Length: 226
Image 1 (cartoon, one colour):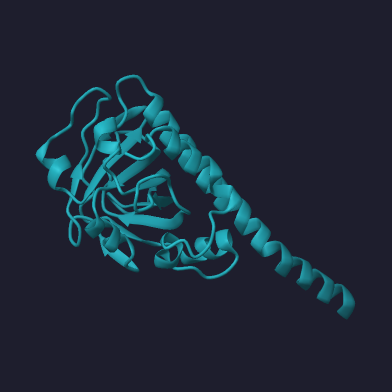
Image 2 (spheres, rainbow, N blue to C red):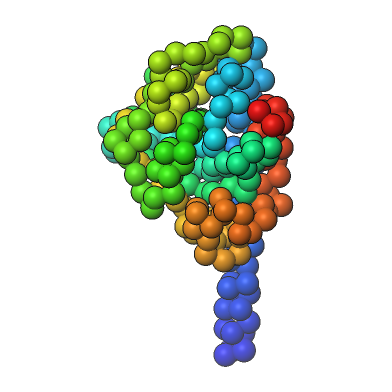
């Protein structure tokens, strides 16, 4: 009996990371899919002139309303940043987003959220354990439309530009009051050990295999060296 118990215990312990890795791989794949669908929609994606200026991109696919909380919401996703020469996208950091309203359409069950971090100050905010959008970093709804020059005051001044898509409708939204923090458990599952956002962005560890779909999609829509 004791032998059986120990065997079951060892199997449960050994399968834990495998299950966690599967979940985080699915999250990264869903983030890649959501961004691809947003950018491939005719004349409704994020303007290339804006996207090319972004230092980091955060994607939270399928963010849902929190039960019994009016206007509340919760979602999990990831963000990736470019290298200093903007030649490529680095290993992703897993994140959680929650708090106030994120512009759900009436009757919508889930919303994809995309955030463009436009400058170094916005990246520094993401490196904190937790911060509030619109409080510690200026946030504005981003412009939409593939051909627009998008040189708006919001695009020029905001540290973070935010977008949402629900029921096929894609638009820039404000995320003021929403909190963002690192998903430490998911980072551990992805990289096999505890990793902070700062360590990941500094390239201490290579990008995991599960992040390839997301990095490939980001690369597809951002020209090299821009």
